Length: 433
Ligand code: IMP
Image (cartoon, rainbow, N blue to C red; front, side, top):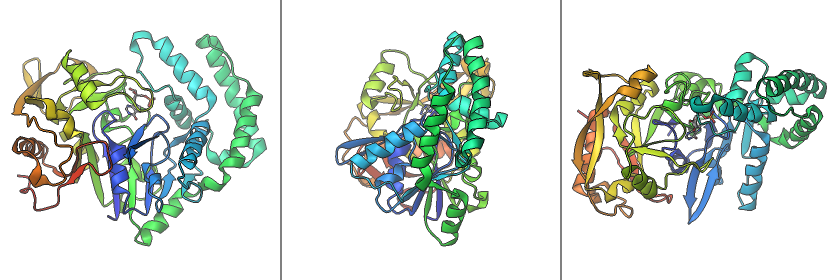
């Protein structure tokens, strides 16, 4: 396995939790490199569902060490709730979870500003998860963020928090007409967090590089997805970090050449939560039918996800910006109800064919997807475990994706359970031509 990065290739919610859980079985370490508790990675094992927001999905395998890199943002309240919930389920977390001393903290004022800014934006709101992600990364780049190292010196922390809160309270009160936050309460809360956090804090870059030098197998777990990437996504309707593969290096303090393999996770159709363009979005009543079949509700916010056909313009784009080696295709079983399945292979804009995924939001709003229609398989595939046992139409669907993206499919997921997947070993499929 060596060092493998797993990234989302649509608008998040591709089913990365399940794929990372599967791939972390043989992994020694699983590391997250960006994002924060805006993620919601769902893993189902022996009928029991675990939703992880901040801790890598690998934590459910007892032998795996889990890391949160310098590129992530940490909400202490959510982190310790998650640790407690895992411990209540009998999962050993202490001694297996380490957080970079350079990671930034999400502060109560980040959540307050996230909510206030969304409310003030009216119809232009992004539809964030409300977890304070954008404001926390804003402070990081504004160079006034609070890092975990800041907790090490109480006086330093207090001076920094007082200065930050003076500015943030002004913003909240005078600009957003919202309530100011209590400085002393926040200082006490974060100092208490320091005491609890101590055993979890490490120089993650040193730990990870040493592990790679020793030949340990490492999985780098992306959160969100390529189209939510601050640089490559559908800006401004994006998250505030880089969920694409390149960020795995900077977000963990490893060199880019240390990454051996990149797997792109893609749903067999498309979903998105929050606002922003979505060329293959379905009209009603199909939209609601998809949502019911796929149980498409956000793992973090419970919001109904928007649903649409698979978009291979996006898939090709994700393959390029992530440098993908293979696909993990998820939720293929959800399509089993359909007589016919549409797949978008290109966009037409004002009569012209667009080859590459466009950056202009107004173009994306206007593009018309070109569809090819494939026959459905109309069979329950949730019990299938071998490629050869998949219905012919289903194999043709997989072939179509491989042909149009030039990327092989490494595994497909056919249900929520850990064991509901089909590995596509080399030799089972003809080479991509
Ligand atoms: P934020 O990351 O909370 O700032 O939200 C920005 C955008 O990213 C919104 O459209 C969210 O719905 C979306 N988003 C953030 N995290 C996830 C995720 O884990 N899955 C799907 N969408 C997400």
